[in-house]
Length: 443
Image 1 (cartoon, rainbow, N blue to C red):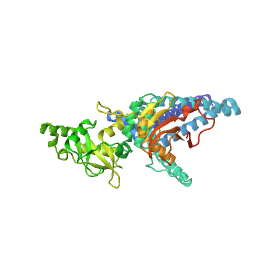
Image 2 (cartoon, rainbow, N blue to C red; image 1 turned 30 degrees about the vertical axis):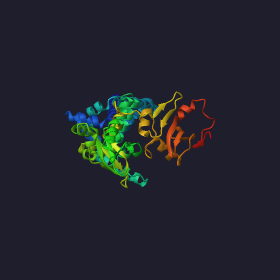
Image 3 (cartoon, rainbow, N blue to C red; image 1 turned 90 degrees about the vertical axis):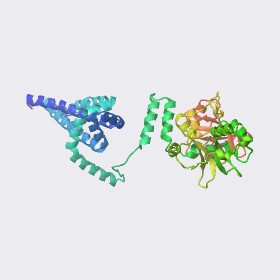
Image 4 (tube, one colour; image 1 turned 180 degrees about the horizontal axis):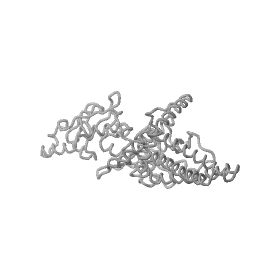
């Protein structure tokens, strides 16, 4: 090899290494770039962002073209380097070429461009998108053939790859982004909970947040008007369901403001008031209605209150607009709310919980992750997992927590002690062997 040819080969190697770095960085940037940010840049009029968005939308074709270009330049660079080193060092040149090219490709064609690209993927992607579009157009037919071969090989192996296959839904992607931002410190716990609650509206049903019938405050419409007025004024609630004859025969909803207007019109004489005349009709909704649909229904009907019925038409409880909003922003309390002491952290790291506390509220307050798919309340979760109604002082271990039944009234669990097993591991009270799934303690 002449001296001129030698220098030309060395120059070609560095050009090929530059192209390899370009392909590697472009692949990293375009696969890591946020489509949402690209969309925002596109809305601001950045024509390069529009190109990048189109490239990202056909990601399989994009990656195939970049990998093809990257492999071509790497192989060609390695071949030229081997030729150069053979002419300079003889047979030892093969080993030297391998070592030198491995180092050059690793540093300048892989690590450096990919690190640069990942540091600001959107900016890098916008910068390279016009050139990458040309590369994809040139290598498009070859990549299409490669895709056809790959799909058929995978099909023979029992793997089906669909064009419209999506690994994550939009909700899953958003939730993953929210959780990641919380872990990295970009979002506080309260902000994460609010965003997560908003994303959960479509997945939760009315039965998950309703006030159960056993906790409802309802008035008997057959009572004397004076007693009804006194009960309504003593209640901390603005809207009260009315029943007549039987406790499950709901005939209307009394609004405190309507009651005050009627009292004013009657000169303060409650005996002149007919409660049913001023009561609004009861609105019944199925317990399987999603919170998103119920929120929209509340907004359409300009109402804040509905009674929840099961598939047999029996009233199971009630749901209000506030119940749904609390799933997003957390507990909303005002000066008339009655504070229910359902969650009491203990000095030893355990938590004493009333059985009626919803699992979602407990998870949000304690930053736990107990499942709420099969039960709404913490007592319901224990009964579901135990497959029985536990006795007092009975202990259960599941989902990474130890549950001790502290109090039971008839068939209801009213109080529990919950301890994360991670805290038990560092406690002197930990037994030498792990407890069984269910065990009895005491008499």
